[in-house]
Length: 308
Image (cartoon, rainbow, N blue to C red):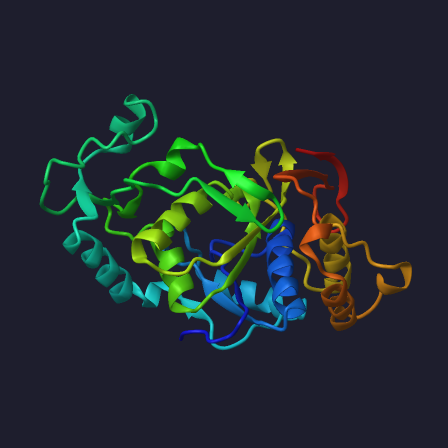
């Protein structure tokens, strides 16, 4: 499924649990940017890390998106059905001399300082039970972000020889996300700023594949405290599908688009119509994260009290 649109966006959740307020922010920003530009909006299930996936979570995610009138275009892609394509790409990198097998364990890398130093790059290791890494000989370190502006990445993890396939045989997120965005013809990516520095890794992959990179826009992530984004790991509450307009209003407020008073109780379709018309990257806070205070049971109406 290759896109031939001037604008193709996507939302790519991991089915490791239901969508929460932080997920809604990312989905909504991506959806609004696509619809504002009269583009298509694809949905992809990032279920490549199968041990972390929860049975039935994909259906919960689809139901929540439908309840919030975030309707996608085309069929939902599941990464778990695309292994042959990822393997072909990995084999291509190996044939080109751009990838190699690495026997280093996490413990060994940690003892070396926490960043992979290229230990196995010239060892010509063979056999199973090894990771496959990409030679990042000239990584991309600068890019223009539609929200954050000029970004200069110095994070060592984003610039190290990135893993294409893990020692346990699973393909890496960095490989599959780029492979899928190219395969689906994605031209614009709107996602959370927790992936801002990782974008350097992705752009390096585009460069090696001689593929045109998409335009990136990174929105602030909702965090419960500095450096702790809302996530399934820290037990973020699932969205209540019975209150979609209220949820959307809270997410819009977070993104700098406060609904007019008469719109707060409008049906979801009307809320989204207003939001599409008023959307613009220049309205989004240029912050990596925004702290939200929430009650124990819900994240419907966060009170934003701190920016990072």
